[in-house]
Amino acid sequence: MIIVPEAAIADLITRANAFTAVEQVFAAMSSGDAYNFPVIREAIGHEDALYGFKGGFDGKGMALGLKAGGYWPHNMERRGLINHQSTVFLFDPDTGKVAAMVGGNLLTALRTAAASSVSIKHLARKDAKVMGMIGAGHQAKFQLRAALETHQFEKVIGWNYHPEMLPGLAEVAEEAGVPFEVGDLDGMVEADVVISITSVFSPIFGAAHISPGTHLACMGTDTIGKQECETDLVAKSTIFTDEIAQSITLGEAQHAVKAGLKTKDDITEIGAVINGKHPGRTSDDEITLFDGTGVGLQDLAVAASIVDLAIEKGMATEVDF
Ligand code: NAD
Image (cartoon, rainbow, N blue to C red):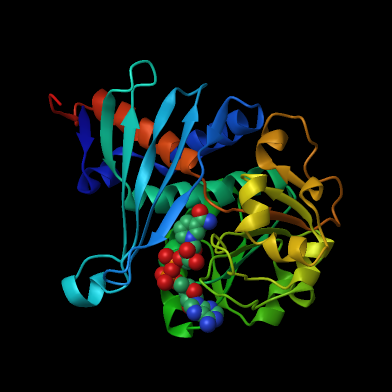
């Protein structure tokens, strides 16, 4: 069994590796070669923690396993540990024997950022110039960094409910050599691509804030009840997602579906676009919305890539298990 501890991940995987792994697994999901198992998420009644498992099997990339982990809201204040904690376990699909244990914290941020970037590559207008960020928390910085590596933007505008968090985003833009402006939500009409990555349960923006032709990646809504954008915007957008079953139950589309404004048949898996089975964006005026709900197969794909890199670079710890 190979062990790759959390501390080793940053030196092993690049954003480009994560992007390729996620793009390939979305394609495999859409062609029926890979599927996710039902998600388990439990409030365990201890430390106010939410704990669960996201797993799946990718018969093309030959990755089988699960990510175990969740959210411990008091970790930082009580123990100086980050609140999100997770670990990925990979198994040999031929034998069921455990194959690897990989730190899942940085991996989660990288695979989530890779998902929105894959959507930008396949759905944004090629002439997109202005990148808009709604949200400036932990994930937002990874999202922006990956987006700026995926497409050549000329400017970033950022809005956050807690403005004191925006300098973190500005730093990321600066590192990438792209000018950053603090904006208000009305200013998002200037953006050609918008990523929203907040933890809100009631909408903070809607159709009035997003111009025709924009590609919107809604990445914050990954739980029943969460909602970042008004249903009027979802209703007028062409929706793409990682997994339709998640999009309609716990993703951004859940509310529009509940309200009868969209059905599951209105939603396309991004894998179909990657595989060339769906044209994706069909006009420069269309608002495309990627409902990035986060699936276990993303974690497995990136973990498998990390294990390969660890072996290749001689950084894998092997344990007889
Ligand atoms: P974080 O706590 O670091 O940041 C939270 C963000 O939400 C900040 O921008 C904060 O200002 C904003 N926010 C909080 N309360 C708000 C309010 N009342 N109004 C407006 N904005 C508010 O969290 P994070 O780790 O960056 O995660 C952000 C979201 O992304 C969470 O909902 C998380 O569950 C989700 N997430 C999704 C995926 C996925 O695959 N789709 C993966 C990881 C995390």
